[in-house]
Image (tube, rainbow, N blue to C red):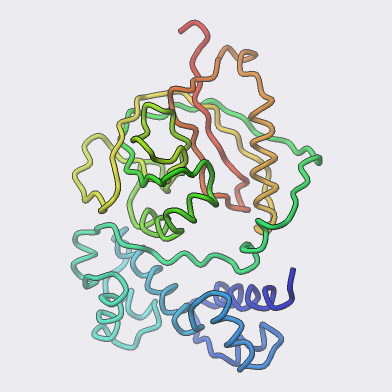
Length: 294
């Protein structure tokens, strides 16, 4: 992996660790091990944002998440986000999300959260993956309730990277702003009956209750999913840069697993579900099952 990419990642890691502190270009340059001028150019060229723009978007998203959950007042969010007064914060919040923070706190609507994807992960897709090192996978049966899912279709995508190319990664930021039954957005592989003509098998969305009365973002659709049993496959913790290997390890385990040993069969009439790969919890994927007697 190129040293320049690792330098940008070090700057991103520094921002994450010091998000509540003042962050100067000199600080980032020291983290990158390059000069301030070169560090600035590397950061901008790799991420498409200047360091100041990146930090502002990051902090505004943190503030929006806290306001959505009702855990802070606007004045507290102002100072937590590093702004000196409410007026300046309100203007920045409006430019970022299209509404003022007081209105958003009272009536949260879907907005696009900033997702700080790491620079080094952008290179991983090009690397070969070795999944011969078998690791333990935790498997459990869970039941998901009848629910709605607000989804964004792609065109032909059958996996994450083609989906991002068709739809853009910003969809995840929008979904992150929406409250979900399971506490986070999901990715899904849809059976044919849930697909619209000429749309993708792979989609991203958010699961909500049957009584959901909120806004459906433009370009999104709603599908109705029945109550169903799922096998939840969870791999071990992993380094964030090893997420591709973590995914393939769990998927290989799923492909070889026979659920009849615990009295189930695969139920391909319900979507397969993927949760966001997070190193601290391991990769998680769910596949629907039915009891053999059914």
